[in-house]
Amino acid sequence: MEKAVSIVKDFKEQCETPLGKLREVADAMNFEMHAGLDSEAASSMLKMLITYVHKLPTGDEKGLFYALDLGGTNIRALRVHLGGKEKGIVRIESEKVSIPPHLMTSSSNELFDFIATSLAKFVSSEPQEFHPPHGRQRELGFTFSFPVRQTSIVSGTLIKWTKSFDIEDLVGEDVVRKLTKSMAKIGLNMRVAALVNDTVGTLARARFSNHDVIVGVVFGTGTNAAYVEHAHAIPKWHGLVPKSGEMVINTEWGDFCSIHLPLTEYDQALDAESINPGEQIFEKVISGMYLGDIVRRALLKMAEEANFFGDTIPPKLAIPFILKAYEMAAMNHDTSSDLKVVGNRLRDIFEIHNTSLIVRKIVVELCDIVVIRAARLAAAGIFGLLKKTGRDTVKVVEQQRPVIALDGGLFEQYPKFRTCLESTLKELLRIEAAETIVIEHSQDGSGVGAALLAASHSQYL
Ligand code: ADP
Image (cartoon, rainbow, N blue to C red; front, side):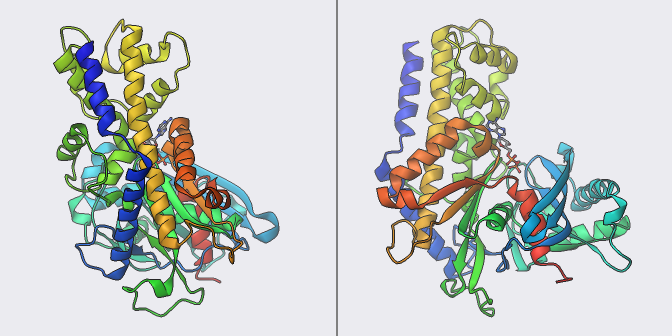
């Protein structure tokens, strides 16, 4: 056991994130954000993508709009009925379809045909009174949560895949054109009115109810952030300055990397064996897709080098991604005195039976180390973004309380992640600034937010 304890101790030390380190991470993030806004150079680490969203929802939007959310493991279709200032969001209907794993690495035609068919099935349940009048098209907000270089609010080419997707022939192609083609093929009467990233949807959803929202962040399968920038502060923007004077920027901060990030041998191995080695390093230490696998890798090393689970190495420990974030959260929040949940999960996931209390405690400690590092670095990212917007300190002249909207499964369903993120952000912001910054949950930003953006970019306005 001594050897195992020493492995955990080393791991913990390497994962430490004192405030000084977090400030360095935030400064590096802030620096890269400036660099990404300066030029379109492929070399800039943060893409700081121009989203063409300069009209965020006001709350006045009315009518029936659709959204399609493609981001992680599912596709969701939504129908959102908006009732204007008085009634707000009247009704939301939605349907989730899981993406057959083989489609994530097949061809773009197969993927988009599947998406269009799923969407058409959902549209067929539309109540008759909402059928569009003759000659009018239904309008869709398409949330496509991968790095896209947009050329307008309704067009954009895929830069690269992230998370579990890898469909070579879509890279460099216009994703709206692809979807439109697949919809036309099956005679679906629908037009993409807005192509959005889920972070932009998160921002839009929150802005619909609160004008002070300036940042949208997602912590789900992956992680990313978007924010409202002054158009004149984007040197690489050569278009007309929009009437609002603002432009939403999709940072693609998942690709951030810095020597200040506390990375361990497990992170390095995870990255090397991933489908995108060397990329999305910030995402790989923070987001839901990866956290469980970092814990698994540490457990495997302890089994191999310290006989942590006895004389044999449980074979299931060698299976990548077998430990999901929600399982890790369940173990991490086990309050029973004998850590029964931890024991059951180790048995069910890894086929490791009869674990002692000390083993269970160490497993919980590993989960703690990984989730706390993730949450604290996530807070540093937000702090870096607030620095970029100049909202990291209080300005007496500005009485506005900037609001940060957050969403995503990890933030919503992993309380330890959420509370640690919130408390670390308070630590990072000076005491007074912490009181002026508001964090709110933007419920279903990637779905409802996209429908709202379709409404604010409707061709019938
Ligand atoms: P997306 O896949 O589009 O990011 P979500 O925002 O719903 O969708 O995030 C789903 C991710 O959130 C999962 O892949 C998982 O990593 C994480 N997650 C979901 N449920 C939990 C949970 N109970 N505890 C911890 N993480 C969770």
